[in-house]
Every structure is written in C-alpha cells, then in structure tokens.
Image (cartoon, rainbow, N blue to C red; front, side, top):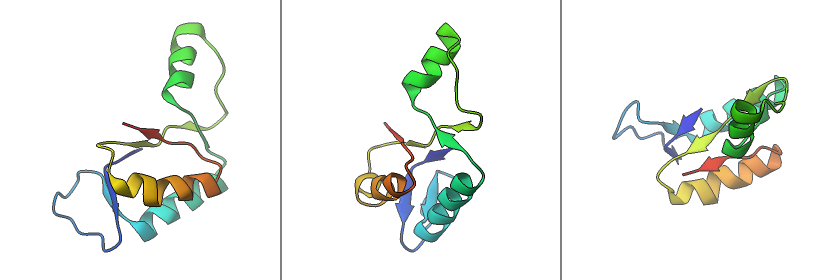
Length: 89
C-alpha cells in the first residue's frame, strides 16, 4: 500500500494521489492487524526475490513517499502501536 500524506480533514487537493484521512488510515491498520498481515521492508522483499528467503504468510509493504512530516508525527507512532513497519521514501 502506498501513502503520500495522512490528513486530519481528508482534504483532496490531489485526489487519487495517496492522501488519506487519519480515521481511514487507522481503520486500515486495524483491518490489516486483525486479518493477520505482517509488514515487510524492501530488504526482506529483495532477499525473497534474489535468495528465495521466506516471507510471512500474509506479507504487506506499507510505503510512504516524499517524507512528509505526517509520516513521522502520525504514521510512525501508529505503526509502532501495531508492531508494523513502514518504508519511508
């Protein structure tokens, strides 16, 4: 899943560009956790592709692009509470 920025009000100045309301982001994380998904990072994916290492049964990569402040202030703490990791680009 790719995220660009998490917004409190869900403003859509660039619709379809990875903007998400905070409440929706929390719901998505809850769903992923309850459904048994485990986050992976780019290193794990690379090793899986190149060295045939194993991945969790339900792997998912959560990426955040453009290094927005919301990544650090909002996404990172929420990921931490779910024991998820993110890929911040």
